Amino acid sequence: MSSPLVECVPNFSEGRNSGVIEGIAAQIHGDGVWLLDVNSDADHHRTVVTFAGTPDAVEEAMLRAARVAVEMIDIDQHQGVHPRLGAVDVVPFIPLRGISLAECAARARLFGRKLAETLHIPVYLYEAAALRPDRVNLADVRRGGYELLREAIGTDPNRIPDFGPAAVGKAGATIVGARAPLIAFNAYLDTADVAVAQAIAQSIRASGGGVPYLKAMGVLVKGRAQVSMNVIDFRQTSLYTIMRALEAEAHRLGVKVLETELVGLAPQSALIAAGLEALRLPAHMATLVLERRLGATVGDYREVTFE
Amino acid sequence: MSSPLVECVPNFSEGRNSGVIEGIAAQIHGDGVWLLDVNSDADHHRTVVTFAGTPDAVEEAMLRAARVAVEMIDIDQHQGVHPRLGAVDVVPFIPLRGISLAECAARARLFGRKLAETLHIPVYLYEAAALRPDRVNLADVRRGGYELLREAIGTDPNRIPDFGPAAVGKAGATIVGARAPLIAFNAYLDTADVAVAQAIAQSIRASGGGVPYLKAMGVLVKGRAQVSMNVIDFRQTSLYTIMRALEAEAHRLGVKVLETELVGLAPQSALIAAGLEALRLPAHMATLVLERRLGATVGDYREVTFE
Image 1 (cartoon, helix red, strand yellow):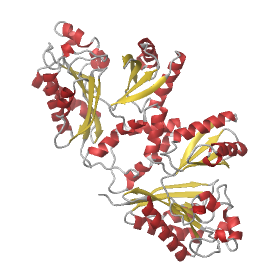
Image 2 (cartoon, chains in turn yellow, red):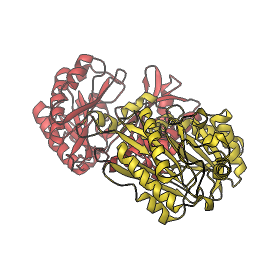
Image 3 (cartoon, chains in turn blue, red):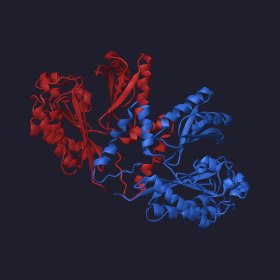
Image 4 (cartoon, chains in turn purple, red):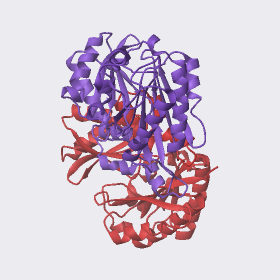
């Protein structure tokens, strides 16, 4: 039996100052914790850090990184195309191996309280860790961004944080939770008209009656219209299904998808599933991946899969 | 440093008699050898066994399996849509880890001699193990099948085997070699007209001026026309490129690809590459696969990759 492994993918509201980004990433160290990826975007003005490890070690590293971010980022000075509530905007914990989503959620609640008490910031719990149904969806918690929260947190009873003060300082607020693996997938269009990206996003996302388990918004990045997407459950709605919906809608509006990108990491099985679909191979042929057979049989070979 | 690992994917000319197939597969056992897959096809009348392990253990298991096949299969009674020279038709060794293709080729030559001497059968060396340029290509070695070889082996100096007698018994001859990983990929068309599959095969395969590193033939399987393909180097010509060529040619001839299949196993990176292409993700984003990052960093996680 291998030790439990969780992934943590915090989003920080700093995508330009490399000193700050490196200062945050440098906190992800220690026994039983491994830094996997650091993805900074100057347009979104945002950095996504991906790391994994044992639950205790991951939470300790996350608390250290949050302390640095809270000290170094002034959300009052922050501008970017991505909605956010604070310096440490979102902290999701994801079960990788030997731990359930429910256990991750319970730990996320304890972590959220510790974060609020240690750094004196308002903390909201979301997704599997949410304590209130109106806080399950990240977009609902983040609606209006820091600017609205700053006005409302002291007056609107619906904005009272789950932990910490009902008042924001220059680090804003933080949203903590547990969720299944999510894929951040962006598509660049051959137009600079952000309205086209917004129209495509609106018609393909789940909330607009489009593709289930898909969130999408249109933004302007590097002078190009971008459909910025979150795939909430790639096992329910495949990346290939999303790509086809995206291209059909782009075609209908007379634009093309030039290129796409992943933000942070994506589970192997999501890309293999897209390959199988594009090749018209039945989904059960995923079992014919050589490395999986080796992993299941060869003594010194081990694999991490989503349980 | 992990121990060297080779894969062996012998093709046997028996795809219907489960007693014979099980008798052969039962020989793949022992310390340091792992049976990964057994794929039998009644129409092709052929079984592809995939196994892996340390070089010595793999060769010992292969010799045992060959002995059973030579004893139990009578190639004079064999009919099937797939070309073949003998009971143990082809024995390719593939480097997986800690061993080069050149080393695999040198070992394949020694194995070929041992096989010929032990079982008294003619052995031809092919691909990286070939001793003559006209025997590099498997199709050249196998041209005319067992029926032509039976007539020519004693009279045509070009058909003198590399090892063993210049005469065939009821087990026919065996082709032994070393090669890079190959993907066997078949596409079923919405027609029973095998001539259409043959026309598509001829125009998309490398030898017909089509897609590089692709071999293809048209056959009739389960009452449907099938384009049966071997992808010789999936890193040079991707499965997605092949799929697009196949569908374009099918469209031109007024037929459709209903479904495809893998015969035996396929390397993970080939399916991930197809996924990336279908999603318009740049190839370098293969480095953003979560499990690869975990494999490169997390202590108790290991991965087999093609070197």
